[in-house]
Length: 191
Image (cartoon, rainbow, N blue to C red; front, side, top):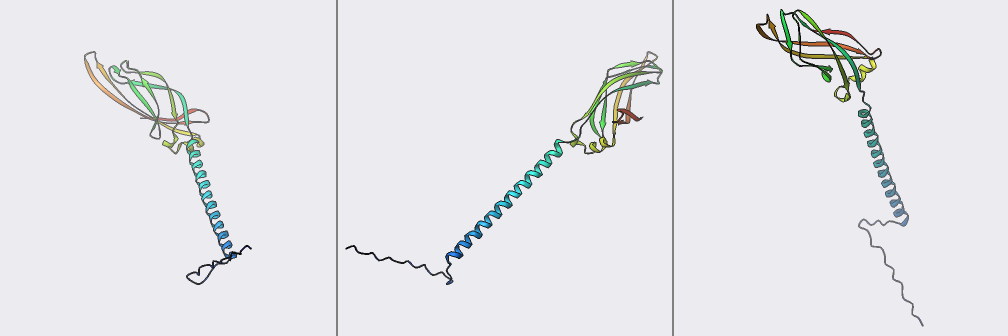
């Protein structure tokens, strides 16, 4: 005859506060924990998506920045009011957009006869590709007027009566506006 083994029941140990959970309560607690983890995952995913949108916005702002490019033929005049020939050295004319250099032209050394004016044609390419350097370019382009300044310092020597030689220097500062609609210069003021 086979003997029956007695089944031993292991009672649950009493809790410290005297309260024990039932199976229904344990299932509800695990369900609440799952809900909390789901909310945390959703919140984390939301923060990641918002950060990605913010980064895309920053990249779009800097990638879609306005740019400026123009070519112009400038006619410069060197007026010699002296009673002797003026020989000038190589001179660089620098063009600026709101204190940012955008182009330059080089005048080769030459001479101007006494009490005469020499006219020089110079081709200049103006470009500003880094608008982050100047945040007003977008508003100037939408207004249709781009302010440009030019500066140069010309040095040379005047030969008076073929005997005396005297060093002379002069500076040029000009302000002008480029009208983008007509692609012309206006309001040219030089000092």
